[in-house]
Length: 355
Image (tube, rainbow, N blue to C red):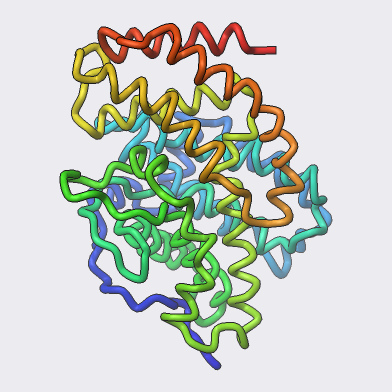
């Protein structure tokens, strides 16, 4: 069976926006990163040294691959990060850093550099940089894939082509990154009252990342895919990518809770609530206690053997602190005045529980 680079035949309906035009090429991206986030260049240089045994610059020059990451980073920094005017507390360039940096480093430490090929490591880095490129698309699901993810796939394809990748020569790259970004959809449709797709809200309402069910979607939309080893391999990378994306549950407890707070603040922003208002009191309390407990204990599962090897033990170490946090937060602010009071209490409890 021959399947092209695009597996899911959803409508191509997400054209370039102003942020793409602000970062039109790799030269612009390198200049911007050098001026504003030089630590990313340092990270890529360290990673290049670590992968030295896999790199043959004569046959696989690394600059085009790095250029793709840099362009995606700059566009997210402008679109939803600290460089622009629509700051998202969680889905911003910092989320790229945490996946591309320490989480990917922990995976490499756990499984070893030779466990994956150079192209696979590049795809995981590209996933870190590109999977959240779009966060404001109108809700619309096709093959179970969210509109934010579909738009991010399309933009990533444009970046790849800009950097010299083609579907003819690099079919595995296009195929794999489509599955990886598509699989990062949290598989829950917004309830009717929700007027916009709130990524932070969906995380704690869903049954987890679509990656865990992507084989079923492929059975429905790409019959015969199991006979194509490229797709089978891409699916394994998709499961690893999903584990990297959700491995905040395996961070040191204060770091885990800092990401939880950022997600909460983004949720309130996307819900058009100020945490200082009384209307935010119960939403913030419920999100930081019941919602996070439901996600941590009931919904979240690592999807890949590599993910479990790298992160499962660290997640288990957060189990008891998480139980204590939920209990203490509910006990100390049973009837909060506003969301700010809940957040302040939350931070105090986290500090008390820190090792």
